[in-house]
Image (cartoon, rainbow, N blue to C red; front, side, top):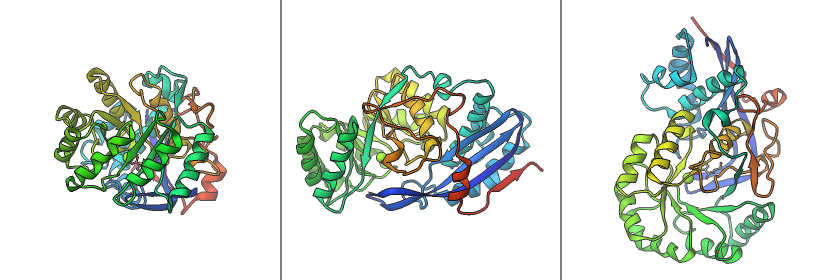
Amino acid sequence: MRVRSLELHRLAVPLVRPFETSFGRQTGRQVLMVRVRTDVGDGWGECVAGTDPVYSSEYVDGCEDVIRHYLGPAMLAADDVTAEGVAALFAFVIGHRMAKAAVETAVLDAQLRAVDTSFASYFGAERTEVDCGVSVGISPTIPALLDEVSLYVSQGYRRIKLKIKPGWDLEPVAAVRDLLGTDALLQVDANTAYTLLDLDHLRRLDEYNLLLIEQPFVEDDIRSHVSLAGAISTPVCLDESIVNTELALDAIDRGATSIINIKAGRMGGYLEALALHDACVEQGVPVWCGGMLETGVGRAANVALAALPGFTLPGDTSASDRYFAEDLTEPFVLHDGRLTVPTGPGSGVTVREELLGAWAQRPVEVLRAG
Ligand code: OSB
Ligand code: MG
């Protein structure tokens, strides 16, 4: 296909409640949405980068800049663009995976819509619905946390993930384990808030029958994750560190991680995410689908990915109303703790143009060839 233009939409999307992690508290999301307009039709991709470079080195203004100055012009100059060729087209730019993923996903959406194929069938999804978990932020108090967890349990979520940090770990985990009972699926996510000096403290999490502990140490520090994994019985799962398949396989070989959180946005796109999924299936390493507070556009693709056979643990694929009073697309609604995998062409969801206008932070920027 030929890409005629790329549109950069910057939206301010309100959250239904603040979301707090070890790296900060947010009350809304600044979202970059990319629309490609091609000779075979249009496609959308959502950029998962946050407002500030605190989860990864990427941030939304930086993504916009790299698309404007590098990725967009390269794509507009190409005679024949395919989703499978996007990674090679963008290889001259080092890193910037979240920006690359947004553009690649928009191209894939356009490409698949043109041949009436869903993301799910292109990915090789085997399920029509996926088990859903929910990520629960750091609360002001334990009672407030228990209220929030109780709400999600009553809504049917099949797994709870608690954000932890030093000073907010053993106590909230113990209280939630008590609330849920011994067998309910419970895991924790530290978002790099600890160091190896905390090893003895982290070992105390073993008491709570957790599915896993996600990313206790900084993303480059594979060695400390190896040490921790050897010292605790709770499985260690990497998130931030997993930026491509090669590094993931290396971390698995070294014993740093025995479960992988796959986020396509963090890995440069769904094609790289598929490659990692396949490699993990081959190695017998369970994977689950992470999230980045996506609107319906990103959520649709995540739900399709989570329907692949290697995704054996519930993902952070929660319903639209976990984060948004109104979603940018038709809402994703939980049924018996599951979301239905979209079956329509491309992402299978439709962007509500009126919300693009209502949430616009600034006028749409259009990149054209020449
Ligand atoms: O570490 O998984 C994470 C949100 C933003 C950035 C990083 C993370 C998260 C979440 C929420 O945990 C996932 C979601 O519900 O979309
Ligand atoms: Mg995480």
